[in-house]
Amino acid sequence: MAKHIGLVGRPIGHSLSPMIHEFMHAVNYELYDVPTFEKTIFSTDILGLNVTAPYKSKAFKMVDDADEWAQKSGSVNTIVNHTNGLKGYNTDILALREIVRQRCLTDGYQSVGIVGNGATANSIKIALQDLNLLVKTYARHPQKDEFAFAAWDNSVDVLINATPLGMTHISSIFPLDASQLKRVKWIFDTVYAPFHTLLSRLAKKANVPYTNGLSMLLHQALHSARLMTGQALLDVDLKSLYETVVLKTVNLVLIGLPYSGKSTVGQALAKQLGMTFIDTDKEIHTTTGKHPAEWINEYGEARFRDVESTIIQSLKDVTHSVIATGGGALLNETNAVNLHQNGIMIYLTRQDTPSFTDTRPLATTLNEYLTLKKKRDPLYIYWADIELTDAINAPNIMALWKEKWHAYLNHQWT
Image 1 (cartoon, rainbow, N blue to C red):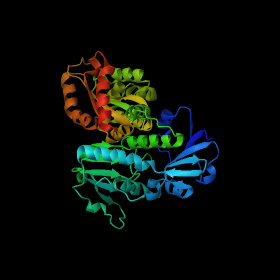
Image 2 (tube, rainbow, N blue to C red):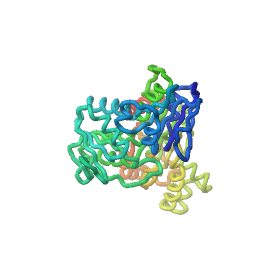
Image 3 (tube, rainbow, N blue to C red):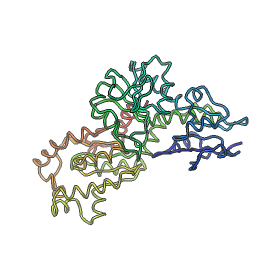
Image 4 (cartoon, rainbow, N blue to C red):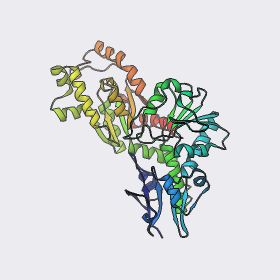
């Protein structure tokens, strides 16, 4: 019988591979880059396929049989190669039902606004249809019983993004702005790469809890694995697997004032977590031959910030790294966006007064330090996902970090 499992479609950012390998160590998992998706791709050594955009509708037409959810949606994202033919499943619907039911029942949400009216939106509507929720669809080109974005209902409890807007290498303006989202109680984004999308930034501005599509991807991957192998896999701890996948696919980005310990703490975290350590100040020195203090003293802060932005831009697609930033890196919003899209921002603070040196030319005295703190603290607080206080002085940096890290993951996991 078949020995391989594959992925056909558009694997944006990180694919299903890390998750599938965690589920099934004995089964090979391969990516298939095919110009056209045809039934002939199947052979006796392919156990099943995960299917992503743009092939889900075509996959439905290709299979010999389909489960209830695939039939209702006309969309297939999992194909299993049975002895009597190909059977298609829509495990996206199974995953979404679990996530939304749990969140809405727990928090008492009653209404959902779906952004987009394509195949993904249709699957979401089907997933929600018997959960006693009021569901409205909003689109650029609304069809019957759908609404234009100008008609957005401010009483909506949950917003679900069913479009690819915000996906890696797909840039566009989201059709709603932060002012329209302020009364939303939870935002769920089906996009999972990058980790933070343009919608996440709108959610941050509107101060609304945001969850990206990684948890949905994990839930549906587990369903797919069960269908393909016939194994119950009841021992899989999805929440722990979520933590593993996050650490493999994002960066930990340390932000904060000079003397906050970004380099010291960053090296400790990277060593313990088996991640690459990157110090943007050292990258500047390596690239230009000059230390940041030399740049600022010789050419001024403005020219230094240009060099710093170039370095940060070059790190835009880096993953699985701990990145220590310069104290003023977030003064440029583009830098903040580039660091945050694949990163979790960790704001380092300290309660004592540091010992000042001339290696930090913008904070060589207490007055200069306090001036920087007043100016930059609001930026750090705004962008921070996690705050660590006195990590540089902590007897056990990892214990301090793990406490805050798990609290953050508990908030993100759905």
